[in-house]
Image (cartoon, rainbow, N blue to C red; front, side):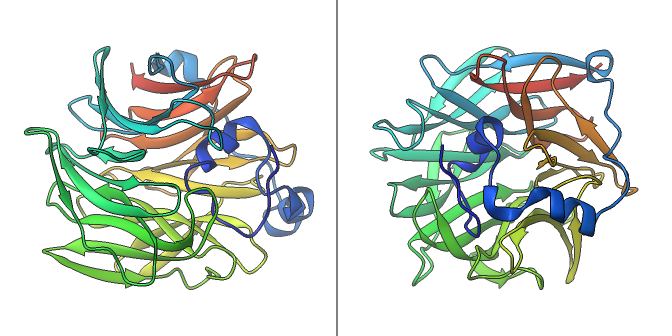
Amino acid sequence: MKTQTGKTFKLAIAAAALLTPMLAGAQPHKIWRSAHGGEPAAATPASSQYRFVTIDAPGASGTGPTGVNNPGHVSGWYFDTFFGDAGNTHGFLWQNGAFQTVDYPGALVTLLGPVSDSGLIMGEYGTETIQHAATYNTHDATWTNLPDIPGYPMNFGQGINNSGVGSGEACTGNIFVSSNCVGWTWDRGAYSFFTDPEGDPTQGGTSPEAINNAGQLVGYFLDASGVPHGFLKNGDSFTTIDPPGASFTLAYGINDRGDIVGFYFDPTGTSHGFVRGSDGQFTTFDVPGASGTALFGIDDRGDLAGGYRDQAGNLHGLVAFKK
């Protein structure tokens, strides 16, 4: 699959993380040595600490859980066929082996973000060229649309907390490659906008992916060289998140303890999941036997949601429950 630097791959990014080295033009060896130094983050003995459950949507070519909440509900999306081919993208809910497709009525593309403990989900729906942010209430299976942001055809809903405060971004471009992204929060019927101070809108901009009950946000930005870095937004303060040894980093989930998950590429182009504790310490998380791992969500117990590529190149969703 051809990749390019300096753009944000909204729909393809999770699959790209597991299929090929992303942003191939970013000279990963040079960035790693100049920006980080030291050794990669320590790997966790995952098989001894977690119970693994694979989630494969029936007939799907790829499944991507975006989060797991404290009651054990998992939300996310799956492809009918690989992105870029004919086919639709669907949202889903999963709990204890029970799988349910959740589509916005009539939409070709539906994507669900992490599900909150109160059963709310921030997501998006539409086509490859126009997306609308909306919330989904799992209790009564109803959708509520957010206003589209003028001048931005791609309105991505990414996260929501128990109080109903949501997060996402508005971008130009399309669902495969988007740019000029501006982060937002949605609270009591109004938007507030922000960008990471180090994010370059011409390269992609700022993409928040999750929000916890304290209002902390995580996501990623692209710098002036088109290299993505994770970020934590706490009030008006931004902290850049890059595990040691990472060529580029994307943060995707945060729990109420302040633990952050995401994934990064090493200098060989292999993707690894990571957990960053509230103390700032990183732990690399690799699914045993997988050729690539990405993490997208974490609950307060430390259960993880994400995806992995097996040795045959197949993409699978995953929940790793803490033992």
